[in-house]
Amino acid sequence: MSQSRQSQKDAYHLILEAIDVGVYKPGDRLVESDLAERFGVSRTPIREALQRLETQSLLERDGRSLIVASLDHNQMSELYQVRRELEGLAARLAARHATEEEVKVLRDMVTADDALVDDPQALSRANRRFHVQIHLASHNRYLVQQLDLVHRTMALMATTSLAVQGRGEIAQSEHKGIVDAIEARDEDAAEAALKDHISIAFMTRLKQDADIRERS
Image 1 (cartoon, rainbow, N blue to C red):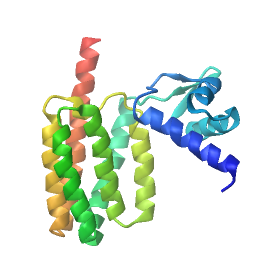
Image 2: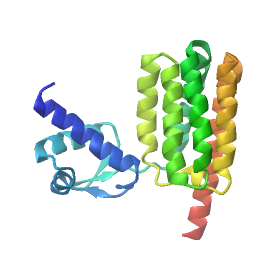
Image 3: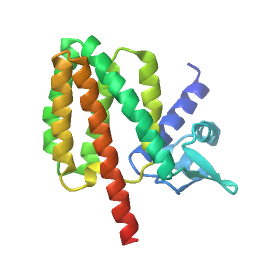
């Protein structure tokens, strides 16, 4: 890979990660010169990365400026609907194709993540790792690509549903059930468990957003 292509790739992932971890939140304006200084990258790859993120609808125009996009209620609902179906399929395929080693990694992740239930941001990052591991265990590259796009768009949500009181413990219990079904090679149960997990997360987020609106 040429140096310019590598710089473009690095700039893209640096900005994407900054959005993902909340350095830049929905509505924040992204300025080429500021990003170039922050990440130590020249402005050309920054400009190309911003164009790519805009094409993916992760950034949007506000006059002449680019800002981090935000999701309205309908967009969030559509995203969760697609995520529920794709994640369910990933769990079904993982129950069919996951190696013993992959199942053990999932089990170890759940055990380690129990220590994070009181730290919503850390648990949110661990939650993403867990779901990506299931995607990879599906052994379907096209499904992994689609889920990667879905999870990138999830970064446009300013809060995590895992911040709701008690949700961390419940989510961990749901993760255990998903891994149990994958380990048992029960495709129907694995798919149902993961779909239910996403549905509960969506309902939790809807209640969370309702509380935020009431307080504002």
